[in-house]
Image 1 (cartoon, protein in one colour):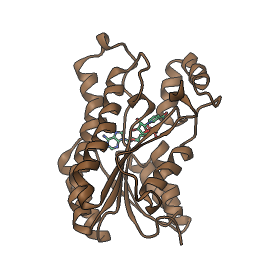
Image 2: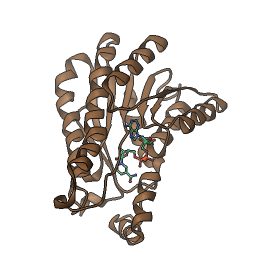
Image 3: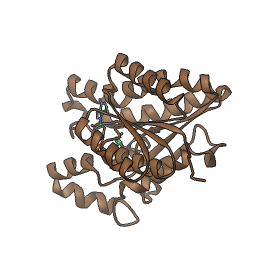
Image 4: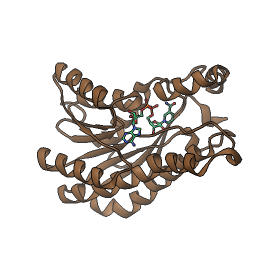
Length: 252
Ligand SMILES: NC(=O)c1ccc[n+]([C@@H]2O[C@H](COP(=O)([O-])OP(=O)(O)OC[C@H]3O[C@@H](n4cnc5c(N)ncnc54)[C@H](O)[C@@H]3O)[C@@H](O)[C@H]2O)c1
């Protein structure tokens, strides 16, 4: 028996980085993986890859900041696959690296829109399907930057702190419906998101490795393993928890 055999799981931002690795691992462990992303080419390629490995996957074009699209995509998935068991709110953007007094309203809104409003819309529109089928597991991908400050990108920090607390509050609201909510807090993970930041500032890359007591940043599979656990019944007594996977970053 695989660890999440036959569970229908939606992964937003599933076409790249942490989301992509999560989709591959979930499919390997028996899930029917719904990849929801803006990146059509990458998303469809990942579906082909999962199918070639014997898994089940489908791609949906989705902009998480558009409520109508979110409602439609979750509705289509539930109809076609008979329900939704898991939802990973992973789509996220980093925002410009600037001190707070230099961030424009537009830059602030862009980060909040994807990282917070997107999680709100995806939660709002997955809950009714989970209530209908008797339960589920939702994972909000936050960050170590949702736990501690870095002296940079305050809009990103604010957004990741917000989804951490949303998971705790939704855990309380929906415990009676058997829907669990947890947040995952990755340290630095080598994905296109971080590659972009390191490209802008190579010194940042070296500093980032040094900031992790384990001596280096992590890889997407480190996070995918945590998400798999939270989606599976192995974590059935966990709700409102924060799973920190950061090579010791936040111990300091
Ligand atoms: N990489 C890290 O070091 C790190 C650390 C902590 C937390 N995180 C978080 O992990 C999550 C995944 O990040 P990643 O590093 O894999 O980044 P990534 O850039 O590789 O992937 C992000 C994905 O989200 C998608 N996306 C962006 N905006 C979207 C929208 N409006 N609608 C739908 N999809 C959208 C992108 O197309 C992309 O596929 C993010 O929430 C990020 O904040 C990453």
